[in-house]
Image (spheres, rainbow, N blue to C red):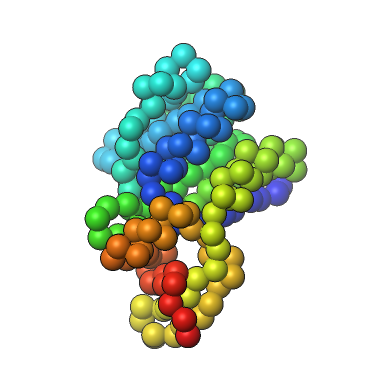
Amino acid sequence: MTKFNFQFHARHNELIDFIRKAANEYNLFVGVVHLSSQFNCEVFDNQNKDSFPKELLGSDNVYLFQSRPVLGADSDYKFIIDNPGALYIWVGTDDAKILEESRIGVISDDETVAFWKKVVKPFKKSMLKGAWVMNSFSGAKGFYKNQYYTFQAKTAYENGVKILQFAQGNGIYLLEQE
């Protein structure tokens, strides 16, 4: 098994644009899982992709599939087991105060992981990288050259939006000098 994992900061509209472009270019199925008390996955394909949600919630997970996914799972874990090789997108919070880290990942065979890397590559290449990260508990600070973020994330930061790692952990300082 091979894995691919990529963390970044992007506004939800940018994630939606990436997902739509990838679905169109590679004829993919898109599954949006709304994490709530009851597991639910909404699937979009070439016949209904224009109705893809205009917004995502910070509690949503999005999956991209090369073929129609198996539905009927009662949990996110079961859904992943039933649909191996899907590209997973964990959507971070995006509001007027906070932009939380999002993640893209897959664990599968070499060929499937290579395919998903190809799908993600243009999105990743469009990003800026390098930022100061501060541990919110200890105050320790370091520069991470592979901290990825989009131009819109940078603009949000410049306008006062806090940039945080997933689960609202460490603070990210995109423009600060040591």
